[in-house]
Amino acid sequence: MRRQETIFALSSGRPPAAVSIIRVSGPHAHAAGEQIAGRLPQSRTAAVRKLRDPCSGELIDEALIVRFDCPASSTAEDVVEFQCHGGRAVVDALLSALGSIDGLRQAEPGEFTRRAFENGRIDLTEAEGLADLIEAETESQRKAALALAEGGLRKQIGLWQEQLLALSARAEQAIDYDEEDGALDQSILSGCRALSQDLTEWLARPRSELLKDGIRVVVAGPPNTGKSSLINAIVGEERTIVTPVAGTTRDYIEVPLSLGGIPVRLTDTAGLRDSPDEVEAIGVARARQLVESADILVWLGDPTDAPDHPRLIKVRSKADLPEPRHDMQGIVPVSSITGEGLSQLIKRIEREARAVLPSEDSIALNRRQAAHVARAAEALEAAAAARDLVLVAEDIRLARAAFDRLTGRAGVEDVLDSLFSRFCLGK
Image 1 (cartoon, helix red, strand yellow):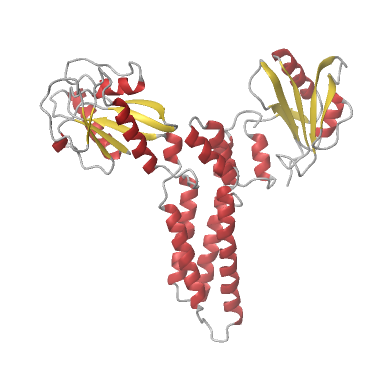
Image 2: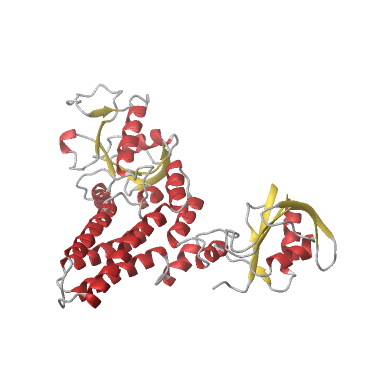
């Protein structure tokens, strides 16, 4: 059901700017537009109009006006957009004029997108994609968010729901019409099992949090092996303290950056050793935890002492010094002083990072989405193992309910406020 309130907000960046866009959405949007700009153009047609204050009649600006009729608009409501000059005074005057019209109010952050969701224009997965797109800082984040915002996951969910609906209809029909009470149609059970396996395969894919939060690359090793110097060399500035004193780094230091368009959290850690110093010992304990949780581990130190890690990069630091060489098979020699091997190490990190990220042509689930897909998979697996048609039908219903929560059709009120608060004003 559409709301009765009409909202407005600046939908472009903060002034000053060459052009600013102010959006109005709701049942009184067209009437409000006429009070300020006079006769509106045809739907989806831009026209130049003089904008006047509806109370004083004073000229505010001369601007482009675009009109959209419900439901063919971004919010599925009547919409008017003012594309005016982007000076602060012009924007403030136009917003003030809109605020003086009865029935209009300033929009809350994310309210335009929330209306699009509530009016069925987009589903919850597309709204999450839009939120991610607004926050995207790297090329890989942008591509993943755009795939979600354009309905990639919604289309896949639609295919799953069609299969579920067909299975549900067949199960209900079997309950009502099978002559042999409680007879089991094996094709229904095999259909549930196949769909559960498909969902399980999706759950095994890399999650979107790696793209959003960044891949944690932990640089670890004994004290004085050049960990902090290496991080400073990669980042290109002094972000960590470097001294010849062992145990200088007593806590981890995290530096966010983009390597080849991939978001990375480069993490410096305390040198791994047994220390009588209580503070350093705490830092060493945290370093060991970070080593275990690292997506990629860069090890500086004796290669034979390197922890067992699935994505381990062994580095021979201080390669400019005449130190005894180990077997260099698979080891990257790097000097933070001369830059030797630095580009090779960065390329190696990029290669390992791409291997743990979702591929650019795939849809990555976030934690919320994965939780509902997992519930649906569990329900379908239970249906496939059931020996009673009534239980099969009930488990299929539970799977359908999980998809309804996934798309936002039901049971997501606790999610909405948190999601739409991530949007900026006017989106």
